[in-house]
Length: 113
Image (cartoon, rainbow, N blue to C red; front, side, top):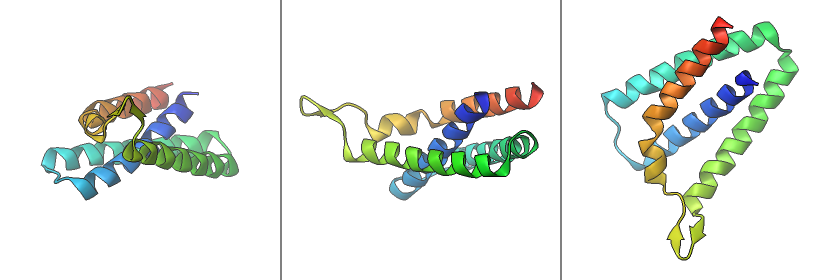
């Protein structure tokens, strides 16, 4: 279960980063964050190749890719309550460092188990 949660968070992170990079200017700290998540993704796929079948990895990756794209698109379009957006993209951008830490910690935990 930890593998699936981490994999979804990685896809969500990279989709959010792609949108963030298009809309705003990024600095060197952000690139370090990208690198940490990329290393975590490589380690996670290494774990997946050793423990799961190739077909299940491909299917789950595709489903999580679609789900994360739809989730970010829904936030971009806007979910409004009483005329005010419920979740703003700026709130998601502020959570990127926390998401990076969560992904790194979950990947390390998964590899150590």
